[in-house]
Structure formats: structure tokens, C-alpha cells
Length: 152
Image (cartoon, rainbow, N blue to C red; front, side, top):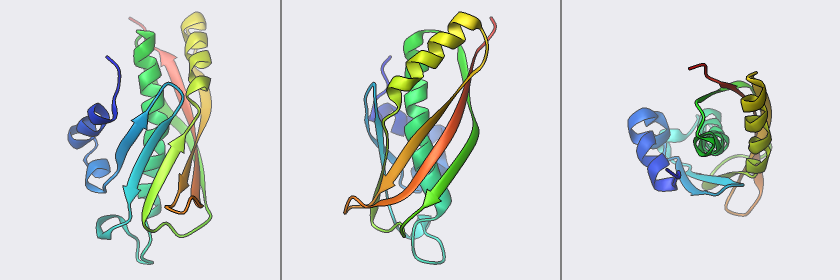
């Protein structure tokens, strides 16, 4: 079953309510990229009247995680996934609609194949860049994903 923005957003209502209630929504997902959007509003702001860093982090992680989950499902194998590490940089105040995009989908195929071949855990760094409505980068997040083939 192919993951679609609608399916992911419905999943988030039930399993990740913080994502849903802060306004984070998947807009597109392809084999190569995932785009998530969130609008700055009262529920997701910090005391400085910009978007709270953790909301940006949830949106950014969703772009990378949705791609990882989609590729794992495509493989037909029982593979676990976990964020092992992350870092971020913030370059501009996040106000208005912020769009996070990850274009690292093609990198995932190689580590899934290696995990299946060797039976050993694999890691991959993926990046998600958040831009405002003017196309200016407001934050950049990097996530190190760890995957491992589950034993039967």
C-alpha cells in the first residue's frame, strides 16, 4: 500500500496528535522527496511570537520519517526504524507558513538493501530544510536514522 499525504495525515490524528494539533500536514510525498507544511499560530508559538523550535523539529522529522517508512513498506521486509541522532540550525524567525522539504529519498534504497543483505543495522543522515513563504531558509534539521531487519 503506497503512502499518501492523506493516509499519513489521518495516521497522525490517531497516533501523533501533537503533530496534528499544531497544524503540521504532509503536502506531498514521492519516491525522492517529502514536503510538510505548518502555519505559525497561537498553538505552536514561543514567547517571542515565532514558531516553537520543537514544532519545526516535528515537521522536519516527519519529512524524513515518512520517506523512510514509505521505502521500508516498499521493501516488503520487517524493518525497524529509529532516530539515533539529530541536530538543527535556525537562521531566521519562523513566522507565517513554513514548508519543510527532504529530498533524500534515493539515499534510503541503498541502506535498506544493505540491511537486508547483511542483517546488520545501518544508519543514514537525512536533511530537511524549512523555508518561509518568501523562500528564505528559517531552519535546517539533520536526522540520523537507524534501521535494522527484525528477526522473525
